[in-house]
Length: 629
Image (cartoon, rainbow, N blue to C red; front, side):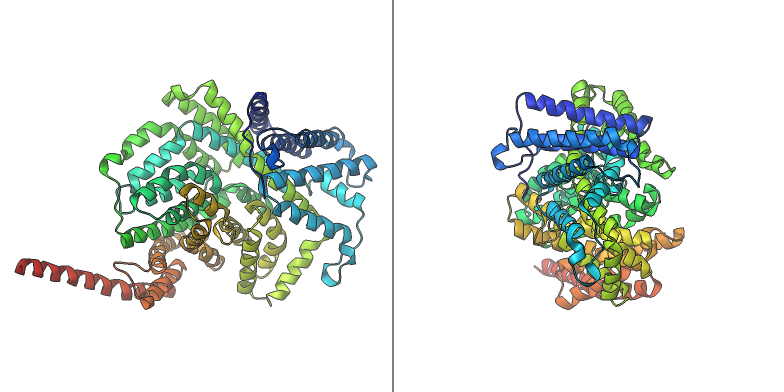
């Protein structure tokens, strides 16, 4: 497993800060005034990220708080391999024969990228990359479909090192342009008070309701998800506030941790900032980022609606109350205090909707944020805030960049060996031409990979293998890629390895296993939703306004009854048959369609009306007894 980030002290802190700030400034400059050539932009980006990785992430537990010789050595190797490429890239063409220097520097870069991925993501991702590299070298000796023609080590390394289809391929390209700008934007928002604004708004919206503290976690995570796109970051920010409050209100520790984990995971699928994968989808399909965000909006809303209703029914079962009025901040007051943070977010959505590139929109949103903060909260805008934001922007991109570079190795091997085409044919054959069975296999594979791989790496692998198979079977390209995205995202709350749930369990002081399984239950709708939108384009906001509007309304109703079925509570505790009927009604209502809506509505009414009548009769009986006494 990874050792984690160092707690540095002394002069090294200033060195890391200077490099991280310089990294952010470089990316902001290229975002605002023009990118370099692809290899230059990606090469400089990866070099800076590698240096920061080896400075801030320990190689072993012995070097957890100090630099070791291994750190200096890997930084030196990173400089050698990167500078060689940056100074010679113009000499290389697709037909140029790789020299011995090319192969040596390429091998060096492969090794340092694998080490960077190990330090930031753990062993699973680099081991997966090593397996793919071994396949590229020795795959010709494999039997049947997996065999490929001979590729020399020289050709393999040259392809991974010298082209934009390997280490310097699309994943690191996304990290070097879109992702880093949005991470910097998120850092500026966080350091200028946006995080507190979102938590205050969540308290004012949901704090007084039953189970108010848990609903605050849901609402604040949904709001924070619009700017972070990182579940672990949300657990570290909103979770440290909401989890103790939930425990204080009466939620058991593992329940509080599970609610926060599921709420934080939704940040990956909540527009406008959805993490690196959303940008990869846009680039892979040749569509705008806005098109991806628009398609993801309704499923994300239904995801949070399901969780919100789950929390409500949990509170009803336990008789948990809301917060006292004196603990609830004013909604209008919160808006007036934090208006300066909302304007850039609104502008970001508008600019992306107007067709601006996500990178350009992100850059000008940062500029606008600085302007609005200067006008509305000048005391916050000082050199310390600027430095902290730029530093965090550089450092927080490290783990994404390392994963993207390592994923580039995997993608490069798939490309050079033709493995993707072979496995696509295998998937179609294995599923017998059935789209549903292929979707099921894809979902299971994604969840298994998610036990050790980050969402970016999962998507890169699955998009090269499974997406073509799904599309050949008739799936919409955007729906197919979003399907992969969803299951890569929710793998972080899927036992037995549920990293976001485990992080929340640590904050809650709860059992990781119990927290993980409870998170799986609370997030159950997320396992159903991707299958729904594969067959129902209106869930991705495709179709007329009336159709999408009806889909939204019935989807919310479906989320309500689905949550009631899972929790076993509607107006009162539900019997097993009632839970089955509610669960079925919820699925039918979420799935758009006239007959499914009618049948789902009738099933829901068949449970709702008797429970309502029984509760009303019970109240009348109680009133009569009181009057007689």
